[in-house]
Structures are given as C-alpha cells and as structure tokens.
Image (cartoon, rainbow, N blue to C red; front, side):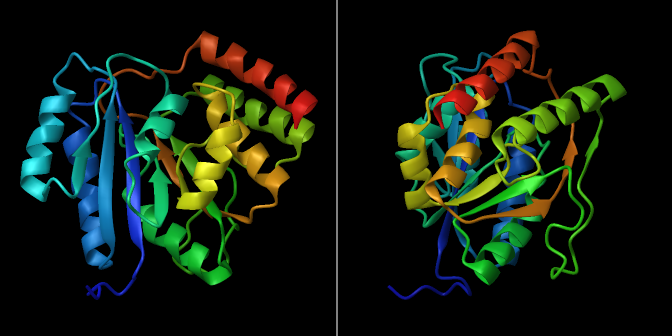
Length: 254
C-alpha cells in the first residue's frame, strides 16, 4: 500500500518506563502531536519494568485511545535496567528509524523534527541530542542553544565533568555522551547493541563510543533538558561510580 505520508519512513519510539503513570500520557500526547503534524508514520513501544504505580494500565488505556498499532505495551517481570530495556524494545520495532528517549518528559518531543531534518540533510546513521552545544546545526534556523533546566549547580557540574572526562579519555566526537535522546537507523542500532556490554546509564556512553569505532556517521541537535516533572530521579551514587568504571573499561577495550 502506498503511504500517504510526506515521509515514507516509519519511526519507532522506545520508551522505557518505571513508575511513570503521571508522565506517560503527557509524553505520548506530545509525541503523537509531533508525528501527526509532520505527517509521519509512527509507533511507541512502552517497555515497562513491572511498575507498581499503574503505569501499565495507563499504557493500555493509551493503546485504546491511539490504537494498538501506535501504542505497543511490552512489559517485563521486574526492574532490569535501562540498557536491557532498549534491547528488549528493539525486538518489537517495525520502523526504519528508532528514537530512544526518556518517558519522564525531560526530553521534549518538539526536537524530533530537527533530528529527522538533520538526518535527511546529511544521510546520517545517528542523530543525538546535546545539552552542551549551541551551534551543532547552524543550517537549521529553528535550532536553539542546548541547555539544562531544573538542576542545581552541583548536578550541572557533575554532568559537565562526566562528559569532559569521557570526551578527554575516549574522544567520541560528540559533546554529550550521557544524553539519552537519540535517533538511529534501525540496522545501525541493532548492530551496535549486539556488541554493547554496559548496563544502566553507562549504556548510552558506550553506544556512542562503539558507533564512532564502527565509522557510523553521527550528528548533533541542541536540546533543552528539563528535570523530570513527576517522580524522583533514578540517578544515584551507584550510577556515578559505574560511569567512571565504564570510561576506563571502554578506554581499555575499544
């Protein structure tokens, strides 16, 4: 059947969730609006790790509202980690491109058209959002400076320091290694995931380092990151320690 969309490609969004009952309807509504306004074919894969707050029931209601072909709930039996959530969700994607992002509204769907525009312009394999560059795509007039809102000075310094350390040691060619708002060609993501060994928050960093090692083309779009609206941040001291260990492991092995 011939597509009626102005873009023949289909876009799959993987949303890992844990206790996101309040945030999920908001981010799904915004995603649906962006895709519809841009006449894009889309689906959202909700990978929920047995949330006790009713996230799965909300996802089922959203599937009834938008269609089960648009909202696809794929629950897991427990809290198994962010990296494995993407691996699991990838098995159910039917799109040509995969968008990974947080479900807590810290990543605004309004940037997705810029991701797609940059990908098309340069035929890129990966487009990643950056909080730390303002001139990543000067040819796009709608591009705004990247930034972070809702973090105190300590958390901003930790994030900046983590990215500076990783960039110095690993030279990945991107300015924001710890971000998790990205667009991948489906086969590229499938390839990188098969060799990525890290779990949790280190997963995102390793994905970029591996991508560079394989020679995939990567572009950056400045985004504004907003701290989660509802619920508590899942980043803690253990993740920071794992991140430091992950940098050393990648330096020694890639």
